[in-house]
Amino acid sequence: MVTHMTDVTDMPDVNGVTETTACGTPVATGESATVGETRLEAELRRLAGSVPDPELPVLTLEELGVLRGVQILAPGTVEVKLTPTYTGCPAIEAMTSDIERVLHDHGIPEVSVVKVLSPAWSTDDISAEGRRKLAEFGIAPPRAHAAEGPVPLTLSVRCPNCGSTDTELLSRFSSTACKALRRCVSCREPFDHFKEL
Amino acid sequence: MTATANAAALALGDDALVLSHRLGEWAGHAPVLEEDVALANIALDLLGQARVLLSLVGDEDELAYLREERAFRNLQLVEQPNGDFAHTIARQLYFSLYQRLLYAQLAVTDGEFAGLAAKAVKEVAYHQDHAEHWTERLGDGTAESHERMQRACDALWRFTGEMFQPIEGLDIDWQALEASWMEAVTAVLERATLTMPAGPRAGGWAAGAGRQGLHTESFGRMLAEMQHLHRSHPGASW
Image (tube, rainbow over all chains, first blue to last red; front, side):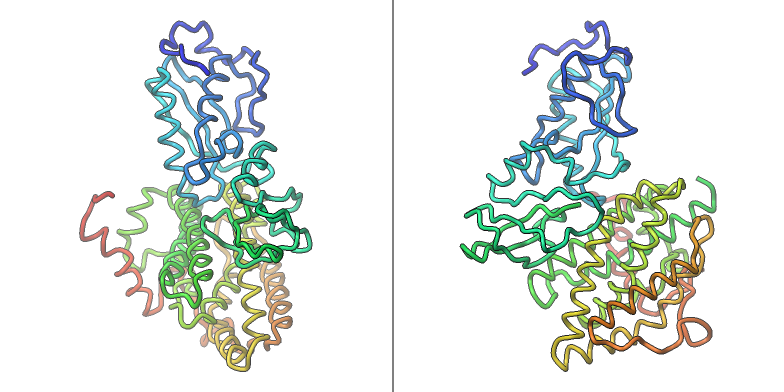
């Protein structure tokens, strides 16, 4: 945890974008992401990425794969690039204000969160840890897929309650845009499935 | 953006906005709870697309809530009343197939809409999937559902020619798009044991001047309801 970041102007590299991160975490891929990330930017990105998803609070934004980069534009001025899961996802507004609050709390007075659409988010952007947490929370994680569009129904979805692969689709749309509603034939429990996008 | 690009964004954005509103009218009225949720989710996807497109042109709220009927550039198909569930599904089938084919092409061009199209086409794939499954279930269901699904497909057929009027500024082969669309509709209706509608899709007896701002009677009433709150309480926020 970073708790000492109250005076960003003391950092030698606040205006720099050339210093490559020494922190190991690679910058999110995509044309909109910063190539060389300063150490402070990496710290801020970790902070922004630690914000929980407002609709799926077991996941962080980092695990969901929606954070596209953090850039220091000037001392005390930071721009965060965020991509929506679905174009109309209403959670993006809550995510934006949560990110602003976290970065304000860590001494950044000016935070702007910019919505980027390209490259389009995919469920393949959810991290392995994110998938594990989804299953633990009772939501079947998305299957990996290469082509666009719905995954063929022949690929089974595992029941997050009993582990059976004998499950059936009830509806392609569920409690949020990103989920489908399924039922386990073995244990009869209905469950949400994070559908592939 | 250029004036041509603005006009194209309005055409695509108004399609999404108007259909979104129509689908939203099902909330609380759909035949089963799952469909209430499904139609609302599809409406939400379309609303998200509309917001992006209208924001390219200007203030999204002003464009949605303060334009008069004749300033809207949507297809007449998407403004048609929901009718029974079969009519809504037929409208979804015709439009989602069109939108998916169109956005798939826009996604690989390097125009203003490529980023949105690449994202939206993945959402629309689920809309198409939903519409196709319901067309098959109703068409290949009971005698009653078959008859009503056929009636809906026939009734909306005359609105489908308008989809392939070229939108200026979009680098699309419209004839090829129409051929692909026709092929896809034919395949779905065949699986659903339905007959391809035979009526005209162009000419005097067909519909279609929505892109020029001419709309059908029910559209004015839909707009009155959609715009009422914003016009009654200008500048109000939640």
